[in-house]
Every structure is written in structure tokens, then in C-alpha cells.
Image (cartoon, rainbow, N blue to C red; front, side, top):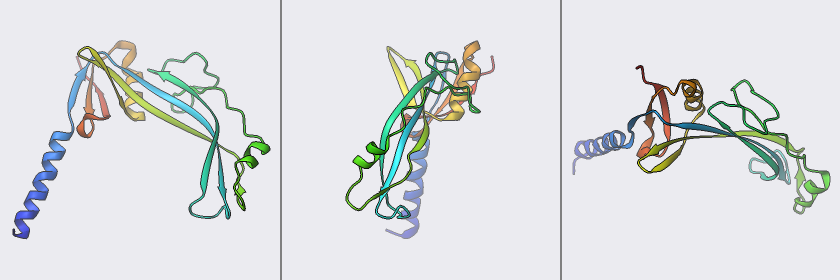
Length: 170
């Protein structure tokens, strides 16, 4: 097989994957959630400057934001991204941190990690589809939800995520 023929097959295959991997969908019923999470984490290593330390997580709290509406249990917010947060989890004690140390290891100071997990849900037939998404899609839903503006979705590869949401002008 010639190199040019092989190259065309590879390029053709990549285009077929790209074309078949993403879909567009227009919907008028939807929900977006942003799960805000606080987690205490400690780094352990013989040398804390080591490139591959191990991490231990301690207490964690989370709160589900739906469509930008203040959730029950919100303690702080909205922050600069429009998200509400739960109360801080209890900081690990020195005894808890030391209990997880292995022989010869040192422990860093506990660090509070903030993270957010975004999801988008919509009905499809008789079932509810829930897919991971991103901050931009969540924010678009926050703006569109009060008026129930229909959204045009761009789904990711093999329709396993929501990559983009745009309001449909009526």
C-alpha cells in the first residue's frame, strides 16, 4: 500500500470520526447543575519537593446549584462565577494528618481544594439524559432558564457530553 493511499485512509477516517462524533440538538426542557465541592487535602512524601508525592483527602462538603438558583444550605455566594458554596468541612487535626503518614514521610500543611462538577440534563423520550458539561454551558442555562428559552446544544464526541449551548431566537 502506498504512503499516499495510507495517508488518505487515515485522514478520511479522522474526518468520519469527527463528523459522526458530534450532534446538534434543540431542546426546551433542561436543567444544569454545578456541584461545588470543598475538600481538605494533604501532600505526603519523603521530600515534599518530590515530583510524585501522594495525596490524601480528608473531610469534604458539597452543594448542588441548579440553574443558578440559590440552593438550600448555601453558606457563601454567589461567588465571581455565580456559584453558591456549602459550609467549610472541618480542617484535619494534626493527629489525623500524622496518622496517615508512612515511615519517613513528611506532610504538607492541609490545603483546602475547591472544585466544581457541571452536568446538563434533558428529557429524551421516556428517560432523562444527564451528561457532563462545562462552566460556559452552565452559565448559558442560568441566563436562559428563567424565560425557558429553547437551547441548541452541541454534543461532544459520541454524544457523551454537552460542549456548547446557544439560545434559539424565536
